[in-house]
Length: 397
Image (cartoon, rainbow, N blue to C red):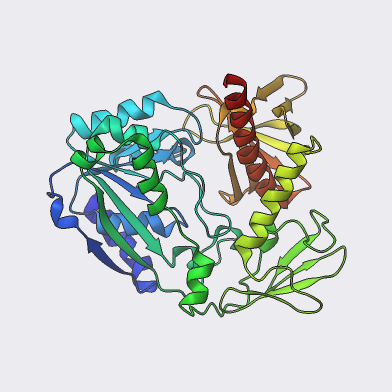
């Protein structure tokens, strides 16, 4: 199966002129189990892993919805089921069993979701503790060009961009034993620090496609001039505010350039960080609230995703509150339940999605009239978690 996966991955990788390099991998024996961590930008990440790891027995930590309709195949290629952004003790047990008993490596995408703005997404605080517990070598696969070739916001339209990867021996068992959890966490966060737009600009990587700004409003949902939300529209090479008319062009080299008037931002991640600051301010002033009409889906087995009805999803400083299905559904999720949020653009080609839930049930909510609001929900969930954590720390002190 690994040979077949490598063969099938080859078509996409050749189209992307894929190349790779290794650093320190001579320290790892081919049969020695290890934890393989990888950044997550687009679907080609899985194909890169299939190519680089074909001669090594490994199992992949995969979100549960990836098993829907194909569980036998996913089990056959060694996938380990996991729930995104949920503390999952069973997952740790499964990884430990794979490493210790099966003597196989584990491939994990600890960011759990694709990057929205081309920069790193939050890592779980428990990741360093998990490395301490497992006591095996840690390898890092870092991709370049994967985001520029197929950014999540761009509606599955691939660009002609070269893709590369570096496979690096990051930590030995001895180094893991000697370092504190805080020190290991710093190493991991350093390995997952990146800015794909900045890299594009510095290396003068051209993205000539005329659709490069399609869907960019999903990420840049708030106008920096009139500050209206939900009025932005990314189409072609430009993103325009329908309220004040201010227009930016996304250039071939990844810069934002005002078509007319002043240019508040020239860098997509800077605009996204500003949106995060706006959300944080709303939370601190207790004015933040989302109230969305949604279509509700559930996963209760791996046969299919079930559409169970319609309802309302509310998000405030008190967390999420989902109601609907003719009064049969009433679910609440506190802010401290998760450090981030499983939200996605054009999820399985159904639509933009927000997922909440616990170890027993997960709900997939598709906003009916606010397609470009799921990025704000993710930012709010992350900032609210940090705010609650600080409040708890101060209360304990």
